[in-house]
Length: 356
Image (tube, rainbow, N blue to C red; front, side):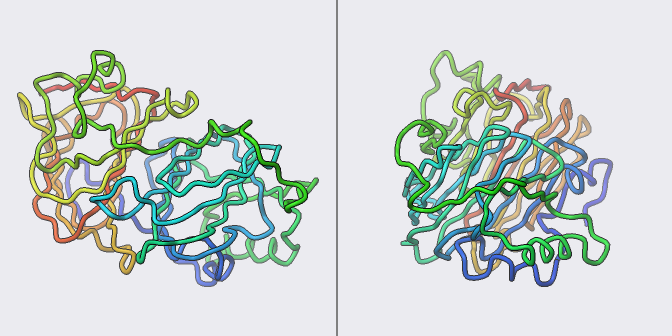
């Protein structure tokens, strides 16, 4: 267990076991295994909840339950697991968007943007071509996971079972679920095909600091990270994708995703590399081995606070960086298996200021 002044900001990427919950979505397109953390229970009150998981199944993810809505905006991110082929998802997904129940299909890494109150899903996995499946994560801008299910195919028995499991053993419910009084029927007869909501599906194309030369206007998005004297080190992948509020329908969110494969410092430049942001940020380090979601496959060193308190991460972990907290540098000590890194920052731009 980590010790030190900032040790409480390192959160294991692990959630409470709820026996029987896996039966709710068994034999569907939903996760084989996943982890879900939220600001209420795990992330120091940050207005964020997020998931990470592995997927190989086919079919509707929530049979009969969708569409659904949230009181906050969210991103639904579909990514492949091959670090050398960032354009490869390894699956074909059908997604339903808006009150039009508009059907869209994609087979490349993509993010679906769902504004607050926006109808989305069913999500249906039509095909999986990768032998190890693909990954999916949610980034939601609310500390308390909340969903209103609108589908007409969920039975009273299912509702009762979900509610019982959510509080079993005195645990707080992982999701605050409610059910619409007026149910929506989704079928071939009720869905539409068009492009009214096409803009809510965005392709993920590598565009991070490690993959291109930055233009003059990038300073606004990247902050001081874009300064010419600072450049990626050997520990930073060149295949990462960075999405900003301008890419996400104006969300107050920017996120960076990439699969890391090599050791070394993540950034080069003057000073020691500690920096701050005016908004809260969460850094997720996760393994990419579907056979063992609790293995990271690497050892990461990160320094927190103006004291440069050093912490070593060798298991899947989320690091909470409250607004104004100095953090960095980050160094990958060794890698036995490629691992995923997800940065989630609660601002439309990645405003960054180096402090030493």
